[in-house]
Length: 220
Image (tube, rainbow, N blue to C red; front, side, top):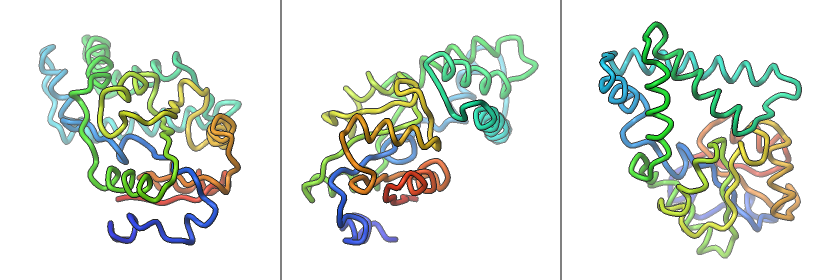
């Protein structure tokens, strides 16, 4: 779909919808600089030099490994503040495996991604957010981001002013768990058919929302 078509909210998507729920990373916000660049910068301050391309590859492998780990737990994708902290620690330490300062790099990056200056708005997501408001729809945010999202939402556009902000570590589940969506429904007081999720990830956002009985729309 084009941006124009998306921003008009096709009737088949919004016939019963009264609330549009947005993902955050990749949908409304993106890292600035990129993840690989941020990792490279942090590592270099501690004397470690790795090309961004290598960091990107290592990050993808480490991230998928943690996704698989969470999928194999009982129940799958249950989470908490502690789990999210440890999850990211494992990812960063695997990216910099073999380096004695890996944990220090992680600590630096944990702080980095909690700073407003480390994020910038995604134009298409912002357009859709405004389109939802102009259409008279309620808006909310539901993300696999952890508790760092909550203070960020108070000072980073376009999250400022959105009343309902749901972070996975705070609700106890990560997408794609159906419990993630059920918890959001319960807190919003909505039925699945009243909710539309807008996100960028085909599995964690689009397919997961559809499995939960929500409508969904993907931005690219």
